[in-house]
Length: 452
Image 1: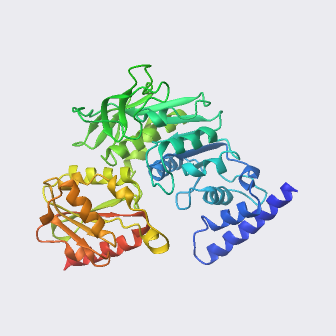
Image 2: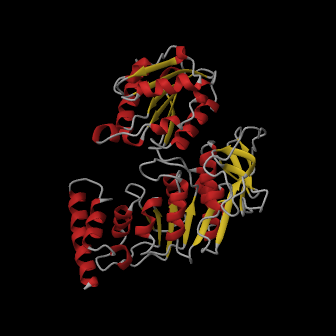
Image 3: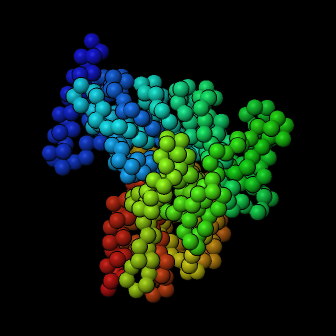
């Protein structure tokens, strides 16, 4: 009976997928949704590719999974992934569905699947990945992923014991996930250790989960990422198997275990992401030469980060700022403040559009967000656009961002008109997940202004 239900779900989903393609739409979610509605164990009946890789964690899933996919394809592998779809149960089902024949047999050699942390209990009971890469576990949207203890609890229950884990050793929460998984590979960073440790405290984890003692930090890069140890029982970071030992921004390279790679992006978060990808690929058996060659052509996903020259010697950088995630947006603010240039203009379009349109919005995350980097002298103007501009204004006042360099606009449309193009040459557009289309319109309008 279950087999018949699976075959019926497969046929229905394939028909929907074909219809969407005829209409010129991506069949990356709806077919999977229909499949799991008709057969809740649909994923379990699909035969998996020879190698199955999953990527999870709070931040960096898409960047890491897309890069791994790109490298494997460059080596001649046929790879399935869900880079343009959803990372929840239906999206995973849709990706594997597109990779399967009508009888459920895989078409490709490898699958690289991005999996949302909270969806793990609906995915991993039906599949046993050969590898799971976890970049980090941090505070996220209170409505979606709550606190790190909640997410850790889910992942500890979901990860299959036979899977090899690729974990961030500098994130003690991530590094100690799923003790039932004996095969573990750790990556991290030793380059550019922060010199100042005074006042730096682990935020998402303060007390030792082993003995309850207060953790001590030798150094913290951001949030709780760094070198952390319990003085009472010794619980802390495990030894790394792959380590970033140097970052050469002048020559655009970074070094992992003595080997140099192209520095695709110098944001410390992305350096961690790429180190994790290198750890996975090397463990998988991809040669150093193949990885280096792939890095030469690598770039971040354009919906996450783009940088280009504009008319009049101006530079535009567009960066996704994951709304309702205070750690992610804080890292973007910090990154912008440290970028080259002494007179920057930053347009912030992080407005929780989906929330303030459809339901009650929770704005408490803005009070967990670090606005201090925007007070940096190199930032000459900050424009906040959207319905929550007054909330941002209050937070800027609390963080000491000078009033004379801030502008607050109630709508996103036309906000680039507030940029003083005669003064600013380095322009940053920061946008939320749900404001990508609005950001593209503002980008187009800004280019038109520069051309004029």
